[in-house]
Length: 256
Image (tube, rainbow, N blue to C red; front, top):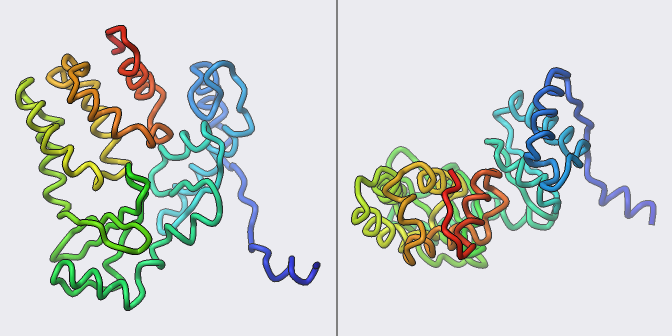
């Protein structure tokens, strides 16, 4: 048994928080009940220490691919706000979501057949989980930029990144209620290709752009927003979650 444990052990090193001045920022998090602190009280100091340690480590190691494994909802909510890290609930997810799972010759050939582009392993950039809980694979080179929805290594559909960006911009900079409804209808057909960062940008626009905010309770607008966040609430800020919860309630209230 000891021999098996030795063979299965995962190499690790301990990282420490070097900047003690973050204690003042940590205190602000606690007072405002900001994740990873609890919503109902100031519990969560240990999780906050982990969060600030990870944030500091990533800032000093921008060239590394970093995964964070935890099933703690509030801690994951906080860590997901850090750029350059992927959060998973269990270690097995690492093997499903790591981009090396999509760089073998067989799968690259499937990508080539779909796009008629000479896609190489170096073009596989990022792997996400989309709102359908399927894999969202980002493929990019100087000549192309695609997003693929994948389920069990089977390609369901794909879209060009520039098309998604165009639709997002049409929504977040919508100049009228009518344009908002049109933009939501068009972007809704591509919602499976939205990354976590896209979703956060869209929710932020829904809170700040009055042409979206004042019609947030319209059926199509409300359904679109809730659909995006149903399985993505843990990537949102506390302010964004408050906004989402107001949509779920029957009482119309101004949360900004």
